[in-house]
Length: 173
Image (tube, rainbow, N blue to C red; front, side):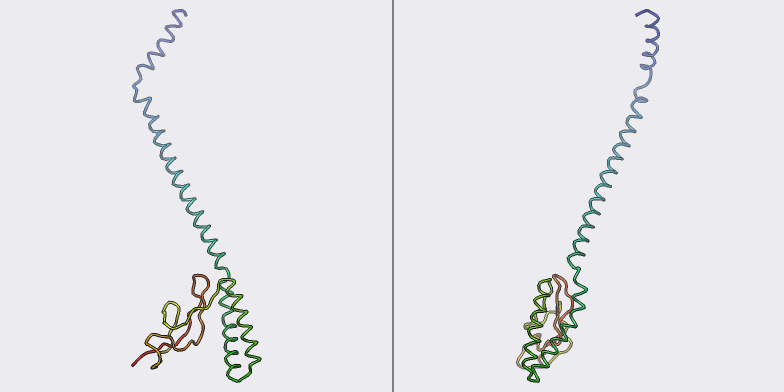
């Protein structure tokens, strides 16, 4: 190298040496902070997206699982009419009609059970979660709080109550 080349290089090197270190590193720190902020924002946004995606999948699954609920509610009055016709036929002695209605009701309940729709049990004990007490009856042969008569059957669709059973409940004086 010639001396002129050395002289030309030396001022640049000297100029770089005279710059304070803070001036060169300060923009680097700002970029690192901005990068960390952007990275944090990305992570949070991605987490929000994943949560929304999971929530939508859960809502979709629930909608599909309970898709038959409305049609089930619409079928309940038909079943009630069949039960009323069966009781009437049994009282009047029309055993052939009663047997036909009984078979029809049995088949209807099988179809409903196949799709997750079942009758609410009205065995003995009153449960306010699944029964609707429409009257209290004074009786000696039942204990207080026991179901005396079922006026209308209740139905449940999977976990949900479609309609509570309308019952009369015993009360002791």
